[in-house]
Amino acid sequence: MTEDQFRPGDVVRLHSGGPTMTVSSIGVDYDPSLVNCEWFAGEQIKHGSFKPPMLELIRRPD
Image: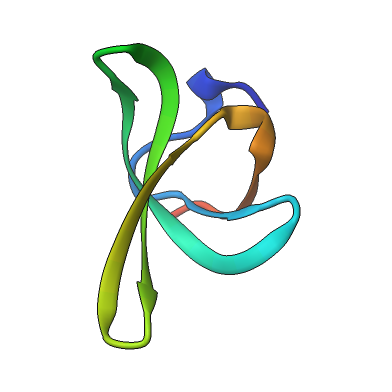
């Protein structure tokens, strides 16, 4: 899946495993291809940016 195939609201996971994450936006100033994600670790919300090849789509909102 390429960066233009992920959309905000998509639920994704790293190919290597880990928690499910929600795509919050696409791109940052220094790299417009990064997929920005949010997830919960316990009660804390975490954020991270990932290259599209690192992610797999779990589900897309209807």
